[in-house]
Length: 187
Image 1: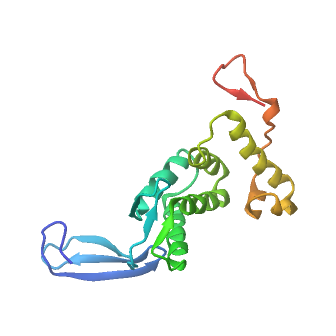
Image 2: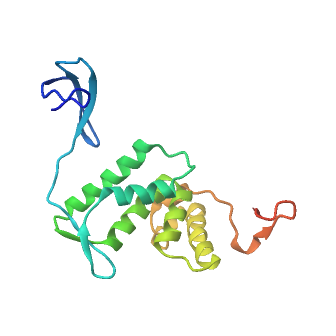
């Protein structure tokens, strides 16, 4: 391993840890004595993603990371949690043991993971992924989550049991504008 500071090719491993992402190693340069970290992941056969228009491209975890980071913006979701979510999706895709996966499957996997992680992030991602055209589509999705939180036994009607964690008191018919702050919604 080459030192990123002096580019010496002789380094020694000071510490190794196995984590969700793979193996993280703390290294020390023999020449300059500075330390740096590396991470290693097992590389499986490349997965090809089939887009909705038929195009094919290699699976890119950075694209998922970008979408999830945008959905989780200003939410109490750590970067480690997001990385674990992405790794879980990658593992699920590897377990399919196929060389191709439709982008729609990956989108659904991300939504399912976000639903259990953070409901606001889930609704944000779903609104972009499902291309909500108006507030009614958005309100329907939130109502599904709200109903699932009120009736955990309705798992046949709802998408997962994890929705039962949601406790949003949202009634789409009762949204009105707040007179003091025109850009804000009140219940």
